[in-house]
Image (tube, rainbow, N blue to C red; front, side, top):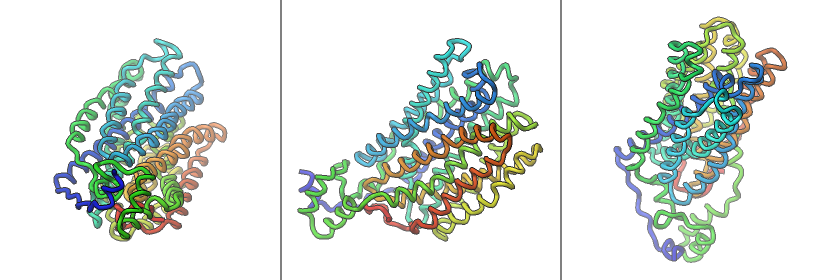
Length: 464
């Protein structure tokens, strides 16, 4: 019986070498890079060409709204994936889940590049696009959460913020790769070439990254924290009734450890994490998705300017992300969260004034500032703080749900709402106002959150 086994079992310390840590870091970086490359490829395509090749029979404004809505449906599938794979990851381990998610994302993204267009098969084309977007989202719903959990659980305590920030560098790498590919296509192809076959190339090229990521994950060891969990026996977490039985037969110390994990009322940590997620997710949807289409459609600048701006912002992000991770290790998560979210509020209107100035340097500077302060900086902190807020028994599930619910409420709905508000008002100020609201939500959440730096991640209960 599992309950009798755990009562007498003394869990050995799960040792990991520097090589194991490196492999985990590369695995997390690659998987997250692939997720964000896939989603950024899609979001840029939705902003630039999908309204023309999948929704050609409507006005440009309505076409952009339809393309953004198609982009948003993936976030509904991500929520389903977060629930399904999150529970699986907490039950049987992080490694197995991360192998499945990478396959789902890679296959669906590649197939998007093979789709016939509306001109070929009519209404069936956008329907197939939505189906593949749903499959892509189902796999992605647990990918970044799993990579975040795995890397945080591998990292040494004093360097957890820095090492966990590598997940954010993965998002940055994926954004950079996708934006770079689109920037090249926009620079070298005519509009006719882009709409006829050029848009397919980025999706087809992502297949190679998937193969490499799968190869890395085949030899990845399980999270040492998962193996050390007192409620895990033979690589599988005990069900609640099994843990209750184990508490009755365990010694006083082990019984109290197990009881803390299953009898704590859940909710506080989750809602705090959701609020922390809101600013980064909402700002990301506006800066990296909506503004690309808005700039290309409404401003008198070159069509490659918004994608070039994201490329430059992503390059700067390779310095921003680890620096923020180091600051979190040095000063704690809360003060850095408060500073970044407050700075985003202060910069929201000046950044939008720069972006809408009509000058290429203004657009570039505004996008780089907004991306690094309001998106990448917050994401670097999010990677470690959300993992530390949750106990190890439900960390994967709660983290995935917080990320994906935040994504639905902010990243998915945000671009559609922004497109609608700017169309109604004929102005950019609703975008700045949305940046302020998103960032204030994160500021308030950080204010009420506990300091989690240095927390023992093997503990089964949440931080609050």
